[in-house]
Structure formats: C-alpha cells, structure tokens
Image (cartoon, rainbow, N blue to C red):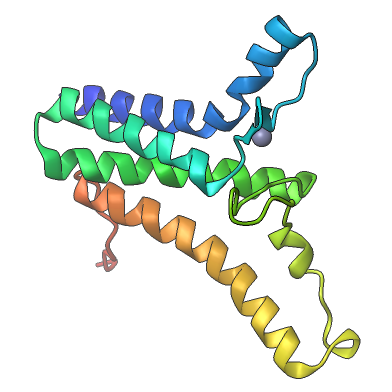
Length: 160
Ligand SMILES: [Zn+2]
C-alpha cells in the first residue's frame, strides 16, 4: 500500500513538473516548431496555467483517495511541482510570463538575485533579496506541507 502511495506521488509530481512543456510536443506536431512556453496565445509558464496542475492533482486525489481534503493536498503538491519547473526555467533562460494576463511580459526572478549591494541602494537590495529567497522557500514549504499531510514525516531524531 505504501509503494502505491509513493508511486502516485511520483507520477503526479513528475507529470505536473512536465506540464508547462507539454505544448512543445503539440507545437512540434501541429505547428512544426518547438516553442514550449506558449499554447496558442496563452503562456504555459504562468501562474494562470499552473491552475491546471492544481486541478489535475485534485482530480487524481479525488480518484485515488475519495476524500476532498486529501485531494486538496495532492493538488498543492502538483502545484509545487509545476512551480518548480517555472523556477528552473527561470534560472536557465528567464522566459516566464508569470503574471499573464495581468502583465504580458516575461519576468526573471533569478535575475533579481544577481543584484549586489554597491550597485543599488540598501532598500532595493533588501527587497530583491527577500523576494528571490521567498520564492524558493515558498515552493519548498508548499511541497513539504503537502507531503506532511499525505503521510510523510520530517522530524528530528536524536542520536542515542
Ligand atoms: Zn519549461
């Protein structure tokens, strides 16, 4: 039973992490190009599109567990996996339209991390540092919270 639970989490996490790049397959077959960040006019590397990962995880959770509460946690886990993809793409090429349709240009959170103190004032430096570290910690905390609700334990064990 435990191995089925782990396989479920692995499959939901891996498929959700790949979900933003699924349009690359579609575009290769239909449009004969490898644009992987857009499906038609909609960017897949955005918070709006991440809603599909949340729904996908919740639907899989409802089918697997039959309980809405556990389905929400599996949805959160899928959302964290999706956001980790955006985060890694941001680090690689910085081409994520996170805030679509509110803001239609790409934003690179990782480029914020490259700011140094002498280049900007102290307040600007602190805000950019806080935002970039907060984004990493947020994704990690979402996944740890979801995993803890789905039966995983992370605790300190003293050596005796
Ligand atoms: Zn991508």
